[in-house]
Length: 483
Ligand SMILES: Cc1cc2nc3c(=O)[nH]c(=O)nc-3n(C[C@H](O)[C@H](O)[C@H](O)COP(=O)(O)OP(=O)(O)OC[C@H]3O[C@@H](n4cnc5c(N)ncnc54)[C@H](O)[C@@H]3O)c2cc1C
Image (cartoon, rainbow, N blue to C red; front, top):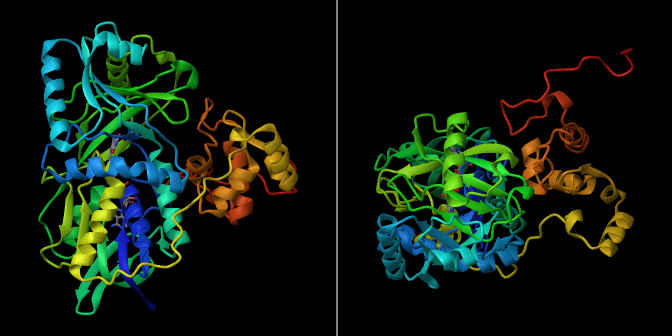
C-alpha cells in the first residue's frame, strides 16, 4: 500500500483537532485530520454543556486560565466566520448562603487574576431580575457578562468543514494504532491508511495517553469522567441566563441553561468511570439532576424532558491542559488532556499549537487564498416566506418536510449527506432532523431512505452513529414479493 505524505497529521476530529486543522489550513501545509470514528465530533465535543466559559474558575497561571480567556475572546470572530450560533447571554454562579458566598469571592478573585472582563457579585434580587426563574433562596450570585452559549458539535463540524475547504484531508473511520518515528517523519498506521507526517498533533481526547504511548511517551495519563444530562422541550422554560451552582472538586457542578435552539437542559453529573466510551445514562442520575435543577430554578417544568445523554471528560493526570511537544520525540505535539473548558479554549489552543510548530521549525507560509468562511446548511425554518418560496422554486426538495417537529426539509438532509453525514446522528447534528419532541420517532425511517438513496448505503447497513449501531436487522420481504 502506498504511504501518503503529510506535513502535519492531526489525530482526533473533536473540537480541538478540528480547530487546529482549520488554523493550520491558513498555511501552505499538507494536513490530514484523522479520526477513528466515522464522523467528526463524535467524542466529548458531541455531548457537553455548550458553554463558552468566561474563565473565572481556572486556577490563575495555568494554561486553562490563559487559553479559556483568549478562546472566549476569539469566539465572536470564529462563530461569525463559520456561521455557528453564539449567544452572549451571560452566566450566573448562585449562592445559597454565606458558605457559597465565600466561594463566589474566590471565583471573583480568580477571574480578576485571569483578566476576565465584566465580572461582578450581585445580590439575589439583582440576579432574579436578570433571571426570573431563579430560586427565591438565592442570596447572591457571580455574574459573568462574557459567558456565552454555542453549539459544540456545530462548532466542530464547521471548523472541520472550513479546514477541508482550505485543503485539509479528512481521514475518518481510521483509528491510529501505530506510529513509528523514523528520521524522515512519523509513520502512522490509521485503519486502511499508511501515512508519513513531519509532525503529529495528538488531539485524541480521552485516548490521548494511549496515542502518546505509541511513541513510548507515558508522561501523563487520562481518566474518564462521565457527565449525564437531561434535555427539556422548548415549552419547559424560558431561561435567560446560564445558572451554575458553586463548583466542587469534581467540576463546575450541575447547571441549568438554555440551548442556542431554545430548549433547556440540566446537567452534568460527574462520575469517574473505567470504560472511556461509556455514555450510558441511568435513572438515579436523572433523579439527582432533577433535585439539583429544582434547587436552582424551582419552576422548571421537569415533565418536559425529551431525552437524556452523556459525555465523557478527559481528565489529565497533570491537572492542566497538556500543550507541548513530547519529550520522547518533539515531532509529536500534544493538544491533550483537554477537559473543560476545552470547548471554550479550542480556538486559542489552535493558535498555540501553530506557534509551537513555528518554534519547532515548521515552515509556516501563509496561503494567499485562505477562505475563513463557511456557511451552515440553509435552514428552511429560519427563512422568511419570500425566501421559502424562492428556495422551493430553486429546489422542490425544500418543499418536502421530513422532520415535522423541527421543520427540516429533504433539501437540508440531502445537503448534510453531501457534506459527509453517513448516519442518522450525522444528519441530525447537521440539520436538527430528529432533535425535536418525538426524537426521530417519525422522521428516522425517512432519513434512512434518503441516506440509502443519496449515499448508496443499503438500508440494512444504515447506522445510528457508526459501527455497532445498525438500526434494522434485515428485510421482512424482497421488493415484488407478496406481503
Ligand atoms: C460533560 C461535559 C461537559 C462539558 N462542558 C463544557 C463546557 O460547557 N464548556 C467547555 O468549554 N468545555 C466543556 N467540556 C469540555 C469539552 O467538551 C472538551 O474539552 C472538548 O470537547 C475536548 O475536545 P477534544 O477535541 O480534545 O476531544 P474529543 O471531542 O473527545 O475528540 C477526540 C477525538 O479523538 C478521536 N480519537 C481518539 N483516539 C483515536 C485514535 N487512536 N485514532 C484516531 N482518532 C482517535 C476520538 O474518536 C474523538 O473523536 C465538557 C465536557 C464534558 C464531557
